[in-house]
Amino acid sequence: MIDSHPSQADLESIRKESLEKDIIAIIANKAGIGTREAMDIYFHSKLSTQIDGGVYGIQYLDARYLADDLMENEPELFAKSVG
Image (cartoon, rainbow, N blue to C red):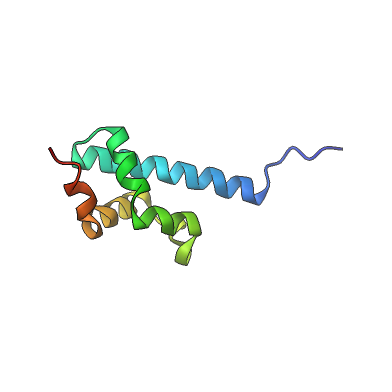
């Protein structure tokens, strides 16, 4: 019999993708920028690396908190997007 239930790794991957999508949408909205620009900012951030590596369980925190943290602690990424 084939087990059709997703593995723990599959569920973690789906959760991470959903978290990243939410963070990108939040920073696009808050910064008043397009989704592509928000994606570029997110994927060049330290936060992205931390979430990808599961540093300190950061991937389990709320997307709004993480987006605010990114905007506060990595403002240089947003400065590049202006103008």
